[in-house]
Length: 115
Length: 114
Image (cartoon, rainbow over all chains, first blue to last red; front, side, top):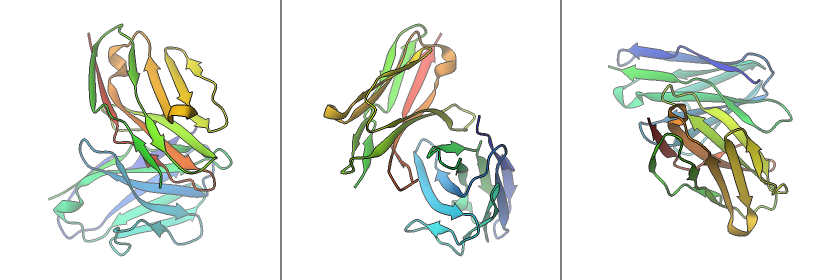
């Protein structure tokens, strides 16, 4: 099957620090990856579309300077939450599309807690 | 604009009962894709099924079955003989051809009690 991993699975950091989350497609190449945010008991909110070798496309209302996305290879996308604040605490999930399949496969998610 | 509605916020059943999760969608596109994902308490979304708009055949996979009806814009999901391990939040989602973005419903939390 299509396996997507995320690291770390859980992170606690102090306010003002930056946190990097990695998303990897383990058994396939992914030209396109997505980053979502999910608040408790809510649906997924798309933050941005990450394309290998080009700039990410951010959804309306998402600060691109705060949520830095880099998709340097066909198997890795990173999301960096810069100068994190308590309101950034959330569950961040990435997904990757296996080329020609048009199906998103999701990572296990990263729980971020900013103190 | 595309929209997915999962009217059932929470459902609670007893083990071995059958349960149907409803999904109604809105789109102006003639070609689109419908999905169901399962999110257990661990948080990871598990892909269950993808259906394109030209394939209205119902599908069965073990205890899971899906009923796609374009006439009512619905893509309902039935779990037969539910088990405690089926407890999760289930999301229905929609994407249009040429766009890989998913539009999610708000999810239905299913609790299967022993």
